[in-house]
Amino acid sequence: MRSIYENEDRAAFRDTVRRFVANEITPYVDEWDEAGEIPWELHRKAGALGLFGFGIDEEYGGLGFDDCFMRVILGEELSMCGAGGVVAALTGCNIMTGPLQSLAPDEIKRRALPEIMSGESGGALGITEPGGGSDVAGMQTTATRDGDDWVINGSKTFITGGMRASYFVVGARTGDAGLAGISLFFVEKGTPGFTQTKLDKKMGWWSSDTASLYFDDCRVPASSMIGKQDAGFLAIMNNFNLERVGLISAALGSSKLCLRESIAYAQERHTFGKPLIKHQVIRHKIAEMSARIDSVEAYLNQIAWLVNEAGEGGVGEMPVAEICKAKFWATQVFEFVAREALQIFGGAGYLRGTAVERMYREVRVLAIGGGSEEIMRDLAVRQMGL
Ligand SMILES: Cc1cc2nc3c(=O)[nH]c(=O)nc-3n(C[C@H](O)[C@H](O)[C@H](O)COP(=O)(O)OP(=O)(O)OC[C@H]3O[C@@H](n4cnc5c(N)ncnc54)[C@H](O)[C@@H]3O)c2cc1C
Image 1 (cartoon, rainbow, N blue to C red):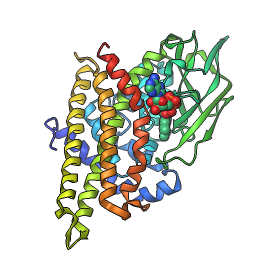
Image 2: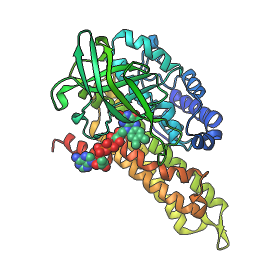
Image 3: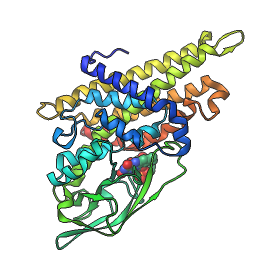
Image 4: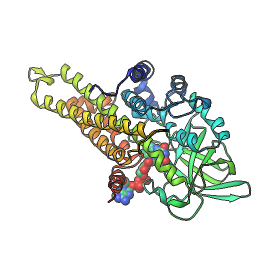
């Protein structure tokens, strides 16, 4: 569907990302997914195109501006490579640079952001714990003040980029139980007391690096605190908004790819003497998939407009309820579309090496990560004042 919000800059950006995906990613996704990682060089190539730079000041290597429509284009076009794991491995750092930009002391920004922006080093966000991810306020990792240091103890799990990243933003409890006692910290790989182990054999996102993090009397200087002490919960919640926009965009791009693959296959494949696409049942599937995808796209465009309005110097408010609703809606649509796509492919879709087989396995992570469907519904209703 043609967007009424498309302009010259956004069209040019879409074209850039599309060419990057076609030349640098799509030909290799099967190989990388089977290998379980992407070559680090891809980060440098993405960095050179400024793909990590939205909302980051130019002095730290960022683009010096933000545009939610371009963020959406990025998530959507990258996801059309057909391997969500590649997208997560490449752009996972985008969920930790926001808090660095808006809350970290200048010294930390200078240390980490230029390297992440250029794709030289990776970044990861550590919030989820083995004891639970949905209940962020129940976080159990602690940071205790000792002289000029904070001493962190506890663990995190399911952390995207956890093995390969050099820089981490980590949540830890500095105060009482509950949401008012959480702070954020900047932790570098190699800090004594900080170790990682790889989480292997995932259902999907094979090429994405996922890890557990362990903090055992890990000392960081007091200046490593990001934002105000005990104010981390709000920072985490605010950060979720753009992360979720990214996940909705990924669901949109993945759904579009399923539709595109389905149409191409249905035009090629013949049954009962005619191409699949000429059977009415298949045509109706295509219509239904397309209509649902349009609904996600229209919703997301409206959200992007509202997010831009709420941005720096803007007059609006972050559309939190809409982001939550769009996230569960987009993943439900993706689930439907991936199922229909695989059905259209028949047995061929059950074989590894087809994009729809991979897409089908990658639906659930988008419905769980960054806030599950259940939590999104809860938050949306709470935002309605109920
Ligand atoms: C591949 C992958 C990558 C990830 N990357 C990161 C990352 O980079 N950084 C990070 O911090 N985290 C990351 N996560 C973690 C992710 O955000 C969590 O998995 C998610 O928040 C859910 O937490 P949980 O898995 O502990 O499930 P739980 O919180 O234990 O919930 C289990 C189930 O119960 C439901 N549930 C929970 N509470 C309620 C309730 N009150 N009412 C109804 N239902 C409820 C949930 O919706 C879910 O279906 C990643 C996860 C995956 C799978």
